[in-house]
Image (cartoon, rainbow, N blue to C red; front, top):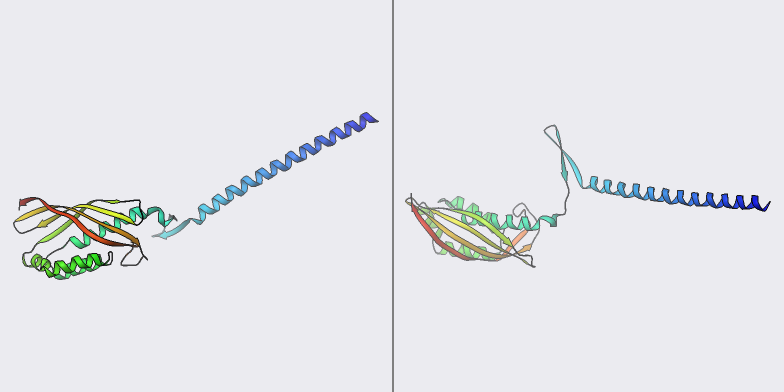
Length: 204
């Protein structure tokens, strides 16, 4: 009788152990399924589908702050291209400069006013001179506020010659609301030209 009781007790312990192992396995499986389901749902939430021209395109969502240094470089490059790429046409000059002034604070406007007072734009128009700005690189610091240094070359195209200048400027960048006039959401502050020297002049 005692032997049969021991056998029953041993069998009960085995069943109990197997039941616990089964429950643990089910919980681990359920947790794994829940984890992968959450990952899949998160990935799907960050992806949208766009139908264009009968083709289905996939677009992913990302944190906007991840590309801020890239946007900062594009912002500074755009400003310099607008502000210093000029043709001998008053309307073209006004259009470029007005677009550029949306991207910077009063430091850029003061430079624009200085150019106007010195007759810089009138001289360009009278002598049929074109300016072309080519930005080589924009270096952004990791400090706050962001500080940007713009390295580039400027070509002064006259009727008889082309002068190449070495250009360097510096400014700090502040986050502002994005708009149609300022798509990158930066404002250049305390902008100043540190160097704008002639490198060479070649006849045309």
